[in-house]
Amino acid sequence: MCGISGFYCGNSVFSEEDLRQMTDCLEHRGPDASGFFMKNGMGFGHRRLSIIDLSEKSNQPIHSSDGRYVICYNGEVYNFKELIQAHLPEHEFRSTGDTEVVLEGFAKYGPEFVENLIGMFAFSIYDNEKDELYVFRDRLGIKPLYYFWDNKDLAFASELKSLQKIKKLDLQIRNNSVKDFLHLGYIPAPFSIYHNIYKLESGSYLKINKDGLKSNRYWNVREKIRPEVISEEKDALDQLTTLMESSVSYRMYSDVELGVFLSGGIDSSTVAATASALSSKKIKTYSIGFKEEQHDESPFAKAVADKLDTDHHEFKVSINDALKLIPQLTDCFDEPFADSSAIPTMIVSKMASQHVKVVLSGDGGDELFFGYGAHLWAQRLHKTMYKALRKPASILFNQMSSRYQRVADLLDYDDNTDLSSHIFSQEQYLFSRKEIERLCIVSEENNTLPSWGVQAFIPINEDKSLSRELIPEEQQAMFDLQLYLQDDLLVKVDRASMKYSLETRVPILDHRLVEFAINLDPSLKIKDGSTKYLLKQYLFSMLPQEMFDRPKRGFSVPLSKWLKHELSSLIDETLSKDTVNSAGLVDFAEVQKLINDFRGGKDHLYNRIWLLIVLHSWYYQKILN
Image (tube, rainbow, N blue to C red; front, side, top):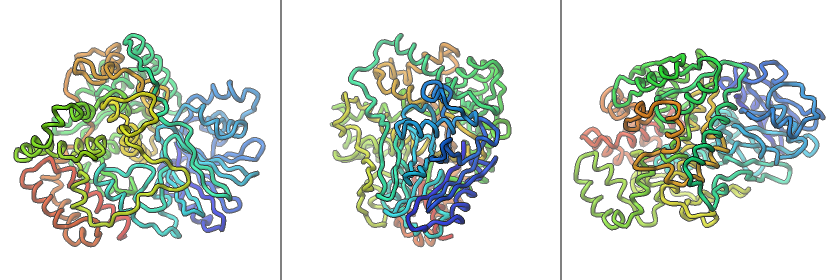
């Protein structure tokens, strides 16, 4: 895993000093080595975290054997040895890592070679002969890639902070991104908080030359939906077993020490159990817990670790640990990002980084196997009875306790509402689109997509290109897979772990496993009221079912309690009248009403308060300063 940066400009608007500053600020992503390449208005900067082939031969940027191409690469391609045998058997490699394989494969076969890669990656290749630059991102958006483009010049990097180092860029806040953030808690691709800075969409690549910029898509999860589903349980379980073992086995290959994040839930336990079964030695596992019992999964993690006989490490999170990290969140994520589970993720990453350089994580199981409450709400809200009773029920629930007011918010939407987005937002206790129109005072902008080939996100229920009609649960899961997973969960894990120079691998998001899971009969995901049914059957072949007979708990912090007590002063400091008015993003009267309602007993408003704290903390640190 590494940090990359670079640019391509026709009039030398970016300098060598820009490139060095862009690259140096990514040192946390790659403390082991650095390298640069510049030629005729283009440049690459690289920070290396040595995982495969620890020798200097794999330091970057790397030139192809014929000297025509140069690569600047971040990630891991797990099947690189098979790629050599299948596509490059005669080539004499100078290193034993995956980077050179990707480069020489591109040199021989062109950009289509990316379709053969199994892994997570973001990389750029420059063609000296044609003066062309390519920038790629993996299929699921596991590895990040931001880029600036103003129809003349391109700059790209692993993190937004790298582009913020270019002093020549006039970065202006994109108002619609503020609204998206308040609705979702993150800013969905292809946009960022700034005009002219974008996130490269998953499964796509850019090609830039003197004629301009073009975006191309090489993989689209919706195009992998097949007309017929896999409905026979034994066949499905056999396929899942083969794919999971292959995926975990690939991701256990490393020239450095490796561990597993273990929460004790279904997904992380599945990864840990598979890794333990495949390993010839005791694996290392890492978990954290909280003093608040309703948020503490550490006893379950320890029970799984004991059963698997792992080398287990555990850390209890206190409010003081959180207080130390909250001021660091803005610099870690660079744009407004409200997932408070970033705090425990940073803590467990710091702990693991003291022992290993690579960890496996269980991300993806909920999105692929229907693990969220939102999937059940999608099912309910499409039923005729719910449609008929929705509006009167919303009015009634709004007069009741905070617990029911949250349901009232979920039931309160118009017929033209994007239901997947609304269900997600209200399941997370965030602002609805109606609330945002009252709250925001920034002007509405034209939401036109960039002209160089970026595709619009079409709500799944409006997509006429699908090979079969998806039921509501599948529609909601596809929203989670394409937006929430990519722009929240994977961002959180990447930034939190790379802050401590720790590489995180996600076996459940092997694209082969994803293509299998989206074509499962939904009855194999929710069966007899049990969510993630098939995944559980696989897990129960390795661990006793009774270990998991308990309600699902998310990997979260006791944020409502903290904001009521230990972090109460943070509300007053960050959301003061002067601070809110100086930012000019939201109406202070609406903010004050929200704070009063929260402190008056409407506990379900805690995440809305947190959104505003994050937004104004970001504004104060990144704009005013």
